[in-house]
Amino acid sequence: MKCILGFDGGGTKTECVAMGLSGTIVARGRGPASNPTRIGFERAAEGVKGAADATLKALGEPAEIAALCAGLAGTAQPENRDRMQKLLEAEFPGVLVAVRTDLDLALAAMPEGKAIVLIAGTGSAAVGRDASGRQSREGGYGPSGSDDGSAFDIGRSAVAAVRAEPAKDAATELGRQILRHLGCANWAALDAKATVAADDVFPRVFPVVAASADAGNAVAQALLTDAAQKLAAIAQRLAESLGISRQAIPLGKAGGTIGRSPYFDQALDAELRNKLPDATIEVVRADPAETAARIALHLISGRKAER
Image 1: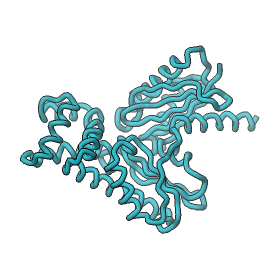
Image 2: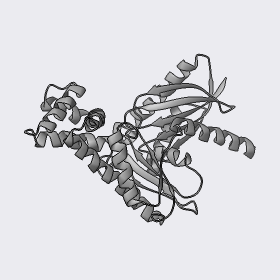
Image 3: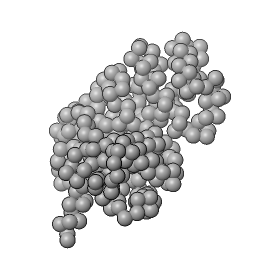
Image 4: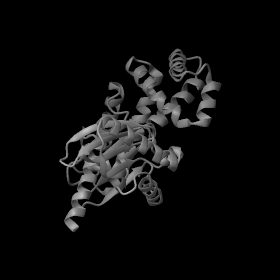
């Protein structure tokens, strides 16, 4: 059968769906990370290929890939997108390939017209458009200069916080849970892991902080409140740059940290309402990999129409 592949790739994993030419999802799979700015371009391409292989295996029958769209974090810069495009064309010879950012997928899932999407996953960013269709983005360029309020930022801040206040019972307990979750005997072991692959350490701390905050740990709650303030500030800066900060707009939330902690969700919503009081906050329900597959399907339709 002929099929379309859609990918949603980030700093920790790559989701993939296979879609028939009728638009029906026929299989799903998952592969390793595919954010080139975090793990390198070759490894990112391998992550996409791994997710494709897992998906086609789940399909359970021979398939011909007609087109694919890979929505990947870390491809906002044109040179990054072009390089990933070439690598994926080499991995999938003869296939129509389109590379988009993870932000493109999220915005494509929003209603037409002015809108903003705040992404809070391994990294963080916001993307939006005004009534004329002009698009802009804020953040999403990696942990060195952005990604405020992301799982990476929360994890890194949590490690620093518990080590800075070892006498606090809440910090001691949170630190103990972090080390246990990461399988580290002590902080030196964690430092060694983080030096080799920070993305394999700090984002994985987020679930520990989230669970601890929901259980009433004051240090964890302070960390998530701080992250919520940072994320809301990203959305506010974007809205101001688009000239829609005081307009009634849909504001979507997406990413791996959303819906994981009632405390965090409530803190983020409160900060967003404070910064953008006229926005209607909603969770982006559309599956990003499915959105990518539909983009690829439209590309095929457009090519046929040109002929």
